[in-house]
Image: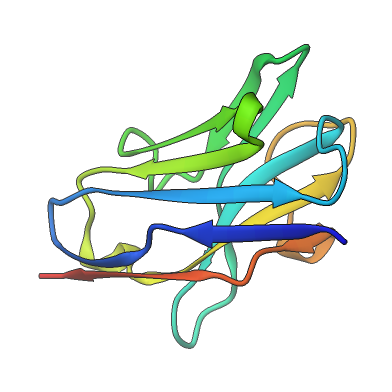
Length: 128
């Protein structure tokens, strides 16, 4: 059974930092591109960041323009975990953040509708 389990969300003041974690289990994710999406109330789920690796090392990362330079996606192969380090948080970053996996040999961002597996989501709230 495939599972993506997120953790690390919470309440933080503007300018603060949080680190989200996503532990993947249930299959070999080496041929999956992993990523983070977020969904704010009344809005569609949107792409945040993605990471693709090859032979155990980082091959490609991409970020939404709104988070570029503030967020960093990374992976720990030994722990089968993907991280999203979020710095300089803004109130507009408030959303439920979802870990996502897509079975593809391609790399780069993808539409939420093409995701194969989702985590349960973790709430991030940034106060002004």
